[in-house]
Length: 219
Image (cartoon, rainbow, N blue to C red; front, side, top):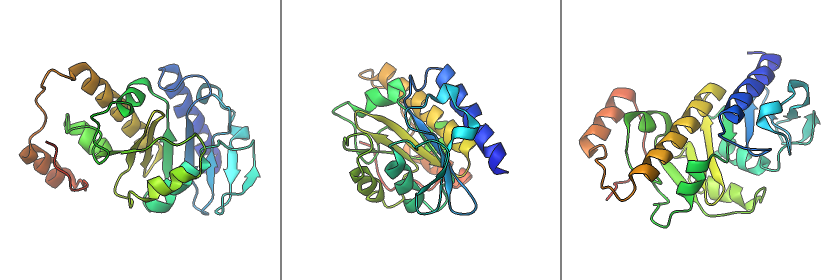
């Protein structure tokens, strides 16, 4: 895909996420890694609903701005995911309501923020890690992401929002949408003793679809 087409794709997906209320105002950011090692990323203080493809920030492989507007302050977050997950070609970060709410609950397991609720959650997101709160744009978040050793493509930032990487922008968007819907399910069912997927069902999904889930058993 050409760089021009990627810019258009970022704007198309950004507009879709914004119009469905998945990231309000000027929150959220999207990046795509390019074949030359550089990447495109949405600008700082830009609404995902009103992106201009010509103004999207272009960074070189070292993270230096080459063209476009100043990039999002969350560049360290995106960089850490690219550096820790070699298969990542796109990263999406939102402030979606249910995922943010989930990140604030006291019972959440940092190694598996959600139980195995649906097959598509596991197929799209794997398991989701929760990292501690960091001020938006704090470079220290990069160390927290790298501390996950590349095991998670789906991460919740405490009191902030979800961030997901994928091998394409479409895959990353679909995964973060699945994460948001699963967080919503969790909140709806919280305290009702729902039936989750059994270890045998999870194992069957992993075998059938080649899932590589971090080793962790839910209580």
